[in-house]
Amino acid sequence: MAYQTLIVEIEDYVALIRLNRPDALNALNSQLLGELGDALKAADENEKVRCIVITGSEKAFAAGADIKEMSEKTFVEMFWSDFFGQEQDAITRTRKPVIAAVAGYALGGGCELAMMCDFIICADNAKFGQPEINLGVVAGIGGTQRLTRFVGKSKSMDMHLTGRFMDAAEAERSGLVSRVVPVAKLIPEATAAARKIAEKSSLTAMVVKEAVNRSYETTLREGILFERRIFHALFSTEDQKEGMSAFLEKREPQFRDK
Ligand code: CAA
Image (cartoon, rainbow, N blue to C red):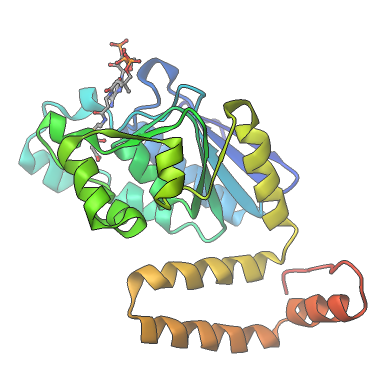
């Protein structure tokens, strides 16, 4: 499918989705988020995709929701359009693993989009922030909730109340990102991580994603029960038999997603 605000490439079972509104530092407007939802759904349904990477440019992953698009909106317009509510659901409904590869600015909705992904690898020039307070608003697509879960209340409050930016080292220290790499290595590193995931059983990877995400949605006791039940359930798959046989026979497993 042709997109106007995205570039999508599929290679070695990895879909690389590049946000592409360079004149607006990849600001997230309705078109971009709509297309992103479509691209993720298409990747989820495509047998040639086993892992997805979302990235931007070296200067900006995304500098937030598009301020030009929303500045004149009224409460009633925002309410009836459910501004970005459905788009957020579409992104977070993706069942295959999604990595955010962040270079440059990831601000406001850009930081929130990165946090909707399963994990974040960032470049050493990355800058994360929730500066909505400077615009007289609050984060609108999950920032107050997800950033707090990632980095804790104190740092989340600091970021949201002062609007300051967090650099890559602080983001790694705080647990917001899983690794920091030199900017020139961001895409090779992120796609290599995605290829590593793509080598596994896709079925198992999707179950692992569900289980980790469940830890955000439920109590510890319920989450542990959920994990135990799906651990048991995986013993009904061919990939569990193959993975364990391959280990015992000292060979590489050949997973078939069954
Ligand atoms: N929306 C719309 N356009 C944006 C934008 C945004 N969020 N961020 C940058 N742009 C545009 C600029 O308007 C500018 O366009 P023009 O050349 O047509 O004027 C272009 O991108 C380049 O930006 P700058 O000239 O400002 O670039 P810079 O290098 O001087 O500064 C920056 C970079 C610090 C990221 C600065 O652009 C900035 O502060 N952007 C806004 C960041 C922000 O407030 N984000 C939160 C948005 S609200 C939100 O996201 C709500 C939510 O949770 C859903």
